[in-house]
Length: 248
Picture 1 (cartoon, rainbow, N blue to C red):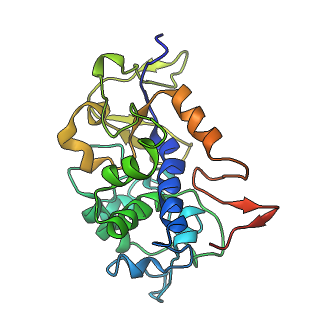
Picture 2: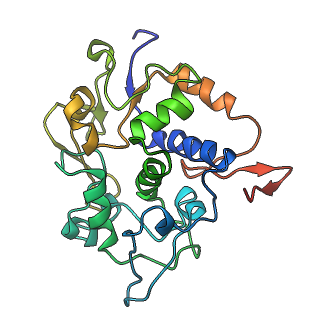
């Protein structure tokens, strides 16, 4: 395997998007305490019994916003019935449309009351677009990847010949995934997720997969070292200084 081989980053993109949001916080353009509706007025998912709920930027970044993923649910769960995309399929919808569908589904819990790994970083990406007036791709390039010279990290493969093959667990040995839409099991009792490998090599499809990026692992490790002291969890971000959570 070549040292500059490209890998699909999938959810490892979450700390990159979160770093872009934190850059905006440091510039005074965004606050962790902002309600999401300040930037996305139409994103108003309700609680199970129809009560209003308020989600903050901090809750998006720490996966405490009341959201989940379709692949965590059973077949024909609420997200699947609403047509919510997990971001790795060929849904044919934009990020804006996906958030409209997401907002139509009741939250799992009151925001801030518990933690659930979720699609919240997609919502954060839409917030970044509104704050910067750019596409998420352009904003992340400006705020994170280009300053750190992560030039191989993008929504599509900068060189498809360097793109590694993808595998999934098999009964006896890993099985090679092909370019057509694949159903990949996740956790027993859940629907699993749909993976479309062609997303990473077709520029026309980047709006359908806001989180499926590619990059070189060694370069990403340099990014993590640049993050400095502190901690990060949930593939999102939680900043600490001297043992205390940052309130910026």
